[in-house]
Length: 188
Image (cartoon, rainbow, N blue to C red):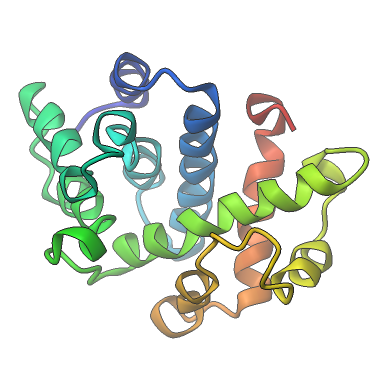
């Protein structure tokens, strides 16, 4: 299985945007926290989170190719772990029509991906712009404002309840705590 250093090298070789990289670091941290919550392989789940959007810069104009390029790059370097490949592919099922999420790893990625963006958006509107001072209540307060971070698919995040058995507030707390632990890497 690919290790974190190899995954970072791949990500940094394919993604130049600092903000997109920070998004990937956020999802990695949340995926590791969710793996711990479910008693799963934190390294594997973290790699999935780190690489899930690694081909975005090259595929943003062709969303149906998103995740397919990343899987191709992984295979080129010898990665054959079916869980990693499957989870990354499941991330873009809405565009490809294939590989819909089917297990906790894949549903965790599906649910937390959008949440990391919402958490960052809430942090950025606060005067201190610091994740360390953010609370679940702050995030939930903005959750109800549909015009705030309007592009965030709240229904995707809310699947955490049905698909993962985690109440929304607890899911936000898991994600927020994970992101707070790497706030310096996120510039927040």
